[in-house]
Length: 319
Image (cartoon, rainbow, N blue to C red; front, side, top):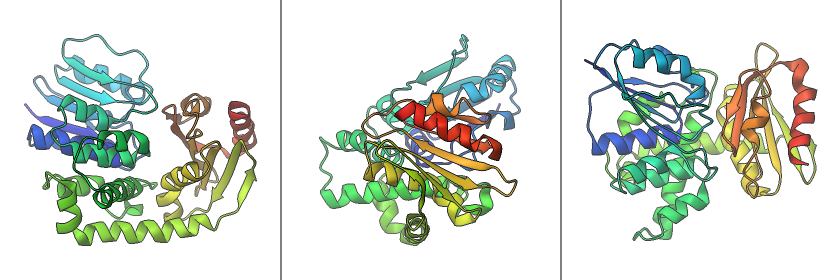
């Protein structure tokens, strides 16, 4: 019998697992990757009696492998907020799926654990750019403004670390970052004791974001804006958090950040307007390799000859 923890390599996935393993310690095989690597269940060769925890990756994108591991006799605990499609009916599957735009996996795990490690839930929720939800979670705590800002920064930086075309683009392998974080019941202690790790993320984030902010928009009006970043590690790292930054600055506008790829295609990050958090998943699922959730979605490999079609679809969705 083996245990597997399968989780998205972004802030939401990492912080969800940190909460869960602080509450329910388990020596498990870690299965994760860059944020865009979501077909992770295929890496699990399940046997009868195995326990598999799956956090923050779309059930729809892992459907065939979910059926495979269930049929192999494994037990699965699946928590997510992305488009799921039909949830399989199995006594061996326990699932918590909520696709509401103001919900993330860290928030769901926080509810599941009844706030046992609330501060880590707040970090993950901030990291998923759900600032209003994160502030709401902190409402009845004794966290001061400076401490809350520290949790927000940590969430943003952990989330930033997850973006890249492969692990070589990242400052930390997400599995390594999880192992560092889970040593601390309180993320504020991680920030203080693990200052070198925090500062490594912080420095990289600000350097990369400053390069992105110097980019001129391909198109920009009151409804939508599209930006293109070059084929470079810094651009791949910052694409998602730059999308969030644009959304926070222009809450009534939809945004798409295109990052050029070596094959001539584009990696695409889409954010629905902050004040109308819907439609991003449906938009991206119109294209091959597209998916996500209502407020934030993406396309892993948009063919260059479909770029004009994508921009038209973006305009149609948000005009």
